[in-house]
Length: 369
Image (tube, rainbow, N blue to C red):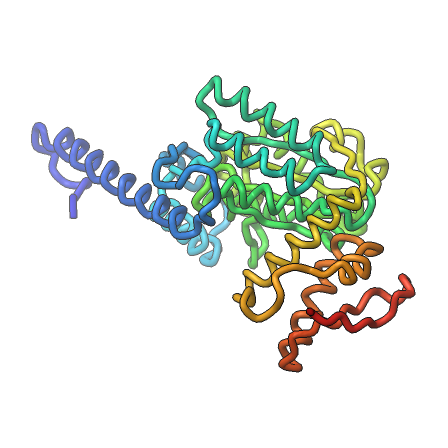
């Protein structure tokens, strides 16, 4: 271990400084390898480029240290030491996924076939990709607000997009959020202070540009504070680049590359300042043909997820399509999952589709022929 405190002899401070610099460089290289390895291990194998060849960008200044505070609390000191240890271990570099390229554009364009009622949103994303390609950039800082009737596939679209881009995604249900701490962390002076989602995604994750899905953003309640308060900073590029989690106020991190996709039923309930930070797209119900294709994909994905492609018929029957045609995408996914689970329990190859009572369709037994 290099001793940087001793030696007043001539030339020694310079030598120690050089050695410390080399040690810091080596630690940074090891940390970058560790983060890139995590990105590779968590990759989803989408059509976008593999993390192996993706660039890395700096998300915080590694020279910044905790400031001297007035508090002498031992717990606070220990907590800051843990934070510094995490930062040193993981380094300041994160993988930049979804690099703009013809391959990325082709991956996004697949959504035209699977989500035809999201054409405007897809066009917006393709426009961003072609602009970023001119700068050799990546899909970063997307701020997309999808609104429309319940169950038209808004959340499913966001997760499908994340899969195609091979980016990590986290869905936050805002209907139950009560405070801004879930995004920006809790105040430092609390004994159980914790960092928020943004800090965890960027610092503890492997990517600088993950996708955060703000589900049902119009249903948030301000009874216990303002859960959306942090978005005023996070949805603006410049201010997001110096974002400070409340539990770690001494360390600005660059959150400007985070991609945000919000869903809502009624955008009129949102504050105009929040709406102005998003690109808004109204989503209508899919056509009958599009709905049939979506139902088949939901069913196929369900069979693949649980390795059941050889257990049940791979195609839904016309009768089953008719039974599901009157329900939302969300309800259809739930009904199919329940039917497959029930068939497994009964050791049957027949599906029992239980549609919502309000649809007055009842319980129908659909056998595969």
